[in-house]
Length: 285
Image (spheres, rainbow, N blue to C red):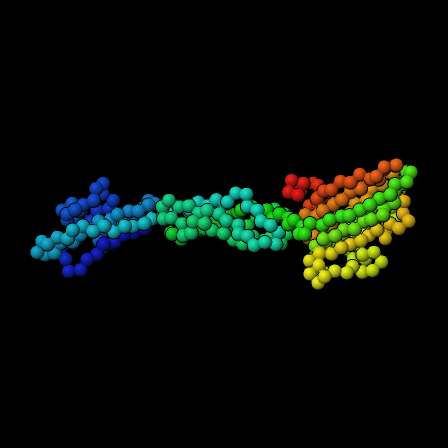
């Protein structure tokens, strides 16, 4: 940049740029001031000090006054906050830190809203600027993680085993959250259906589920024992009951039927969009 010194009604001006020590009298300045007229180039990032004073025709001299000249041509630094994670559907800000040792950042911490509509790993462009008006941007990564089922669903079940086969005497899923879906999968000997079956709207026994207004809004009970009336499931057959909801960790119960003994039960979780129980979500269940 160019600095220029001018004064009116004086005999002379003196100045000095970035002296080793601050001048205290006019005589320590360079005269005439080389910055008068067309001015002179000042370069190099940092704060430069131009000391200026004038003298009139009677020989009266000013005390030198310092004028700071700030030069910053270097972009600021920016770094993302590590490990940024947000719950699905919640508000969140992807943040980064801006640093600048010369002119300083306009805002030390900058942020942009996170898109938390879906579970997954995403990126966002975050922009900062220093007081010299130089912008900088970086790409920050963040995760959107699944919510937990609230309320947590419960499964009440009962089986009768006679010989090599078993029948289901009770199978009720309760505390099913609003907008959650209940699915059944039955594979193997005796299964009454072979593909996944949505039973969210199943009846409670022989009549529609009766519940209080609060329960109807926030939780439901799904009784599916009627689907297995008269059904005998052979050894090795598997029944999966799952409760899932968009962007939410699902609950899964897996029953494996055995000859002459009650079936085994394994409870697990289900990551949104996954078909493999327990994979990627066991640590958070």
